[in-house]
Image (spheres, rainbow, N blue to C red):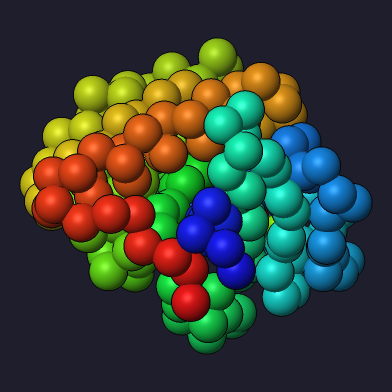
Length: 189
Ligand SMILES: Nc1nc2c(ncn2[C@@H]2O[C@H](COP(=O)(O)OP(=O)(O)OP(=O)(O)O)[C@@H](O)[C@H]2O)c(=O)[nH]1
Ligand SMILES: [Mg+2]
């Protein structure tokens, strides 16, 4: 990979919208590993990711973002470490209609703590129009409680522009973090 290519992770609970988000922005046909969803106790939807999602976006500045989505089901948790290797930042998605969306976000922030390294993440909260609680401030306070200071924004992952905004914010976070540490942006191994 060249030094203008960046590996980013989309993670979050089942049904938060990782597959939808990557498909919304990818310039290439997204790689999907969808299978029929039989776990309706966790989320009522047709399919669920059983391996990974993959897509590519080029920023106006020429940087190529390689997007990897994790499966949400706990039985595929072993994929998190595999997909997280060499990643420069994380988009954590939340479904505000789920039972404990703030707790879910904290779980993923902890699991990807090495990649996030304090700030290299953005949290996108979905379905806030119909489920306004918990609020963005609730997420912010909980994340600060575990030492993570990252932007938390309301996002509809079905809207391409909104997913691109998440990526812009994340890219800014990565840039700021590497300037702060005095290091140049690392090349993806
Ligand atoms: N009504 C509504 N639907 C939404 C909204 N955001 C996302 N969705 C839908 O929620 C579903 C999300 O499904 P996926 O993209 O498969 O979610 P995922 O995070 O990849 O799920 P797993 O792979 O099973 O972990 C899709 O059907 C989206 O269209 C929203 O704001 N409102
Ligand atoms: Mg998925």
